Length: 371
Image (tube, rainbow, N blue to C red; front, side, top):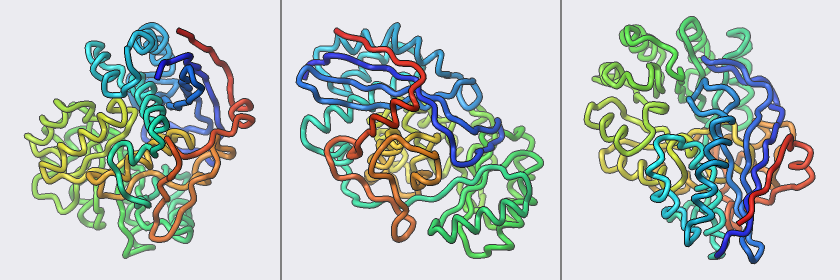
């Protein structure tokens, strides 16, 4: 395969409802899409998960655009093949910028799978037809509203509920949800919102209300604090932002700072890197799962395919399409099925069709690069 062009588009979609976490509220999501096209007309799609502001990550739309146009796309055009792993090796000398790298790597995986007539999951070695999923519930205006929202998700068929928490919005809402729904599986996610001195407090309320998993309560480099929380805890301690590569994962495993790994494709640099990290965690006896970052159907398709691989054993944060955007970019939509699962698309590549008229309406800017 020979690369003919790369189109980078800035797209904006409106969320079905505001989504609030410890670092802010999102009502619209602006992101980048990459479309690679070969000389014989084969397409591969990638999605960038970086936000406009450096809140979840130091990467932003501006930094990603600069790295793509100034470094990574030129490197891709010089690359003798379109092999995703070759691209990962070729760009390893550039420090960081994993979300930018993942934008290209995911498009290359899609392209490579399509060229072989395989789905992305089959190309990566996955065999599952359906993947277990849960839902992440943002911070709500009131506790009563949170309880009501959780009930709506349970009625829709979701079995695992993850609650966003932060100091001042933790024990009371968690207790209310547990009281209303005594038998459900509850996870909580703080997105680094707590100081390292909060180990004892988090341990107490999480244990009291039978929380199954506490995700990233402390800053990403606070490995020792996570290790103290994990020691003897009756719940899993999950790391998200702390794990960006093989070295950070090995260090966290050595410190016994995690008992669950959240793999976000964009955060770690792509699908092949995410697969490798999950395999490492599995060898250490740590289960993995796929986290979401409010992707469109394009990014969600990539994530669902990755979740079909054997190392991923916990329910993913990959809810149905109607959970996210008023008008998504792909067809068919992802629909919640039996047992709180999503079907893994079976067609070539990501296995969903990009609806060009929707993409055109959502596009705010676009630029095409050619060999």
